[in-house]
Amino acid sequence: MFTFNGIGTTLYGKKDLDAEGWYTATKFFCVVFVPVIPLACYRVKRLASTGLLGFGSTQYEMYPIDADIKQARNIYLAAYIPLAIVFVLVNFSKR
Image (cartoon, rainbow, N blue to C red; front, side):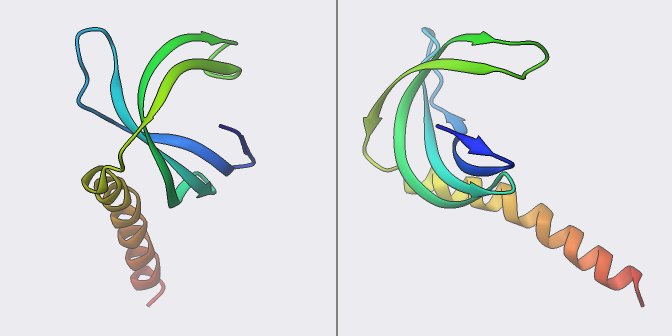
């Protein structure tokens, strides 16, 4: 996964976390860090992070699984409902 200035691919979601640290995540193509198109679904385990204060890279162990439509829907809702609220508030505050 790679993003540059918020455009690229990244994992969103953390579902079905087990005791070993494995969870389900969906890989999205994103624009300005907003998920646009779901590309694949993975079972993921975070291995290590490098860098300071979240800057750097994170290593994952992951393998593809069948698409999780409910997770993709929930990610869309979590991303677009706040954007819609901000849009409405900004437009009504101009009146």
